[in-house]
Every structure is written in structure tokens, then in C-alpha cells.
Length: 154
Image (cartoon, rainbow, N blue to C red; front, side):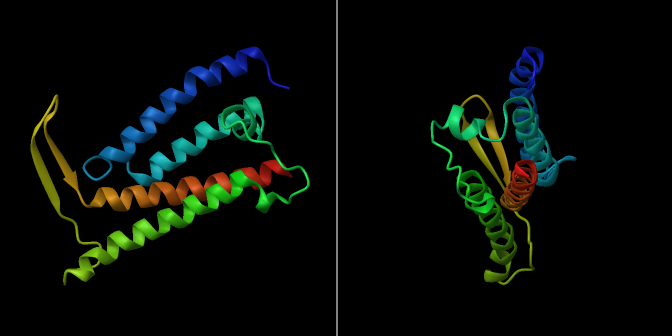
């Protein structure tokens, strides 16, 4: 049982934590941060939701799906989604490393591009390291949420 104060605090804090996590993910190739720190913060936001509302809140309350009570923990739809997120992130991280090799460059070669004439921002700088950071982010989020869900269900 959690209190109204806890649930209200989670509703206020989780969006802020998620915005900071995405910010750290996007600036990670130029400044401190990156996929790992952003992934840990995102997992911390999910952990707060789980503590305040329970493990099945996202399935029942947000997605409107029924939770299968007889299935094992690894057959739970949330855990399967977390495992798929882990695999997708691993594929992105390895794929971004091998992309340079495909063009005859070093493994994990980094390049950057600047796009001009963008409304509001005027110019945007993109680095190929962002793909690797997104892969690491998905690996961390998928792995930690799988662990959190399995251990939390015990």
C-alpha cells in the first residue's frame, strides 16, 4: 500500500526524470551523459512507478491489457517487451559499430553532419555516435527493467 503523497509525488517527478534522461541521451556525444546514464534514469522513473502503483500498473492502467496470472514471469508481456528492447538496443549498438567497417573505416568510426534551415533551431548538428548512444540506452533500459520486473515479481 502506498500513500496519496507517494502517488502524487511520482506523477510530478517521473515526467521530469524522463525529460532529463532524454536530454542526457541526446547530449551524450558532446557533453557528459549518454545512453548509459539516460537509461539508468529512465529505469529509475519506471522503478518509481512500480513502487507507487505496482508491477502490473503499466499493463492494466496505461495500456488497458489484462495480465495473465498463470503465466511464468518470463512469459509476462512486459518482460517480453523489455527483452525485445534489450535485443534491439544490442543490434543498434553493434550495427553502428559495424557501419564504419562496411565503408572501409574503423570499428565505431564517428562522423557528424550539420543541417541548416531548420525552423526554430536554424541548424542541427547530428553525430553518428547518437545511434550508438540510443543502442546503449535501449540495452540498459531493457536489461534493467527485465531484472526489476523479475525480481519485483518474486
